[in-house]
Length: 390
Image (cartoon, rainbow, N blue to C red; front, side):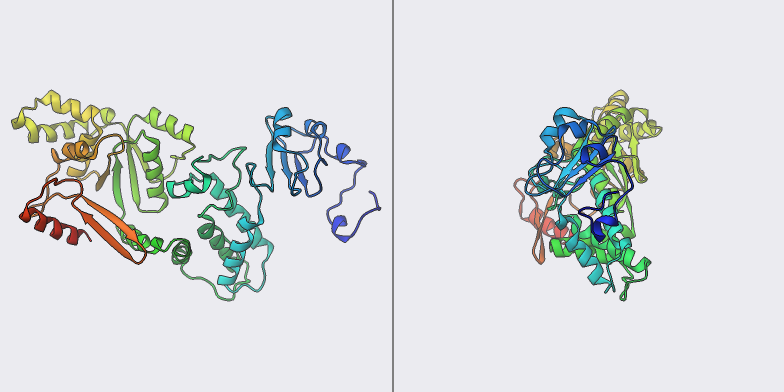
């Protein structure tokens, strides 16, 4: 190889080759990693690269070649730069603060390769995950989906603080450089989330209670993208089992188009019309509604086609613990459907409640949904029910 312009750092990465220019060396290459200057990589060089080339043009302020130039000649290329105005910005803020956080929290004696690799893998895993609604704001409403234009989270993704430090701390402990091991990683994750959002600590207390007794929740409008995301979030947080109601093929197609991963333990899909419990639910609904002008075929039609009636029967007969509905229908309509099947407990009143989480306190506003003009007795009952709910 050449000797001119070499030093100990370049020599460590040098390879024996007859190529004497970038144009010669890049022919057939799979990956280009540039830290040089604008224009160092030409379109002709990119054309000579292997199928589906990976191009990291990291020169600042202008990359070795722009994404627009690459897109004109190689639609199969995966490209990243150091600039925020292009997709796939590689920014050291994605790693350094969180690597330091994890290292400091376990009092690591050094930051070794295992810890760096753990951070990189955590970033890769985060990019593959569905982006929840509370994170979507960091992407300015353009919800990303893992692919050529989204291989790495943006620097402002709020999930970074609770994903990378944990991976780094765990790697430090496993590689023997941690002087103060963290015994409860779940608690550590909660503390990290609380640093980003003080309200997170309040929610974590609720999550902890639910995790001790996981629930089966039926998501009645299972074909809706928003509902599928909620179901995935519910399962990812280990709160219980999510049941999506809807047509299996439609749910899977919509999930695929939205980049939502449903092939995971804890998510079930039920088609009401094809369910083995269909007859049981029809009989139960008919028993309740036959004296209110409903024929058996009316009840059968409701169970076959109405998601709220089917979901309510699941809860009434112990096949699920709760219902999430109201995305595609007015809440009052959804509530009327459910109350045909599920009664309030003896001595209790059905109320609606809104939960407001503020810094350091939780406020429950009731009743904003069920009673339009409550009398004095109803107001007293609402207050008691809300207090019990709290």
